[in-house]
Image (cartoon, rainbow, N blue to C red):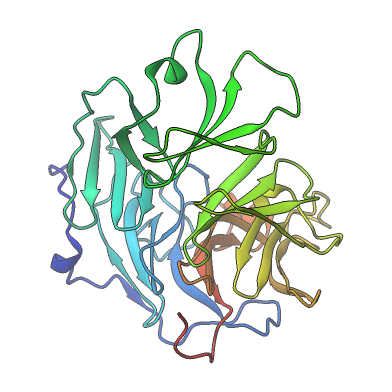
Length: 344
């Protein structure tokens, strides 16, 4: 195998696939469902990310066959506006991506089990060099290591704390010692550059995701959703109403858009491995309308920065994830703002 080199976006000339007009999914959705036509990795380790409001970066393969060769995965970019997919790296055995606001971090392993890692501004990434600072912590929110205001004893050792590292520019949440299992402890929000923390309610056992179009963090409980909040960078918290519906799922399956909540509902008891039943993606609007957008199984669900689009790896039924089954596992997206112009 040739040595690996990342491909800066400006140098990409090869177009892998062009499928023309986006296709409609099996469910009659009132919103356009776009299909890239390209195999997408559904194993969970490789996530899907929006580069901007039209391009999606993901892990897939070059194959146009109905089976997938997991030994030849690569990072690819899908332009949803013109429905074209281009390669960003050459095929390797495994790939992992983290992307946020123009910064990318990815690692891969080739067939010789040689591992490499690149990081940096998108299109200009270089071989990753571990930071020297002892208090440099990996912030998964923005994919970077930062030497920060967090005391070293909070990060490691017998006095370490349960921390949630927010975007570097905002700070971190501190839920106290990892050895203190008491409930209803306040969570302390340490804003970057501010010594005195803001006291928040107990935010343990919560999923916390940042949404660009709201400039806020969506705080969702682990398990059945019964309350959701926005946490703003200044420490303000705001409750968000969510309809009590049979399709209301666990916190890791609830996402927020400009049109309301997008929920991935997993039935658990499909009629068969070939029929997904109620499993699929649903939109719960602020007017309490429940719309099924797509049937089947989803992975790597992510919302575009403007809150208008949702992208995900999609397989129509359970057997589609078997390499000897003819079902296609492709990257798809739903545009909830179709027909609307000049979205902020």
